[in-house]
Picture 1 (cartoon, rainbow, N blue to C red):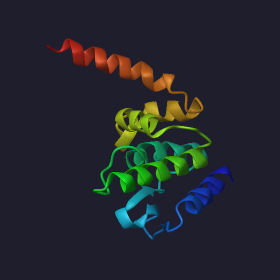
Picture 2 (cartoon, rainbow, N blue to C red; picture 1 turned 180 degrees about the vertical axis):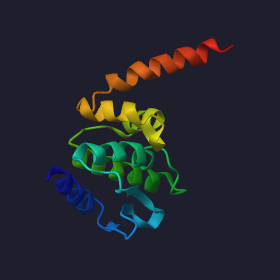
Picture 3 (tube, one colour; picture 1 turned 180 degrees about the horizontal axis):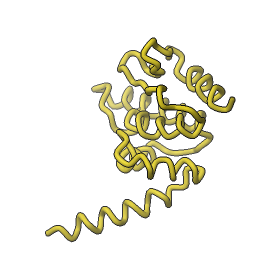
Picture 4 (cartoon, rainbow, N blue to C red; picture 1 turned 120 degrees about the vertical axis):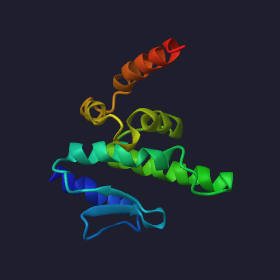
Length: 138
């Protein structure tokens, strides 16, 4: 039941959203921002998908050429993410989440992050390791 409540809340936060016949929740039709629901069975699965597929539109995607509209777009999406997930992330923190979890880059880490109650230290461990490896390549 919690999954259904999160999906309903997402559809309230994104007023033009809909679920299409491909079993995708299209959150922002204007830019085709969507999440596939075929493999979503729990509320946790849905929130993992939000981290992986909405974080980009909360932080760095360039949908508008004017800074004011772009920042408002990021902020609106971040606010919606926070409302759905019960978090209080800033746009900068969403950028961090996108960097390490976006586009499904590390699905298992994203699941750990959501299970932990969105504890950023879960990501920071991997981020520190990644930075160390990046620094040692030369």
